[in-house]
Length: 147
Image (tube, rainbow, N blue to C red; front, side):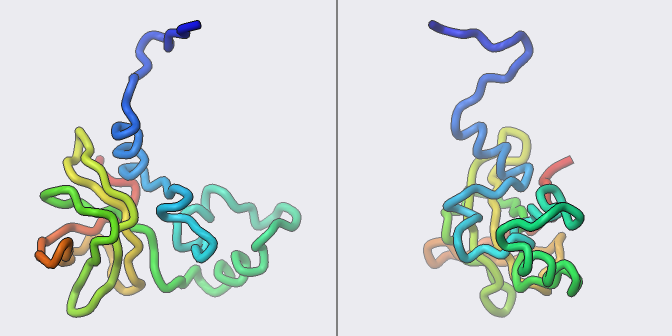
């Protein structure tokens, strides 16, 4: 009726899971993944697609992008900030280059987020986040985040 986890297993909250998911760069349905997402943008292709296995839904698009050097218009990146960024916060250089899709506070790293960032912004990079009309400097990192 009330199973106990094995000794040494961390018990966490949904917020703890969300922070770990973001640190690890794991995209979530409805946040980073929807019907408009190109698989290569999310970073899932290397760990979830076989180019030697048989046919699968979406194979043509994935194979075409792979054969052309995986050059997609945006990529999922990690963001480190001084304070938690609301989902939907835009990221800027001299123009808008990204948008935050998930956000949490990590016990290890502080405020973290996932964002789709345009091609040409190579991590590590400092960008300007513009939540609610204000401006803050954030650091865009490759995934996974942290040491």
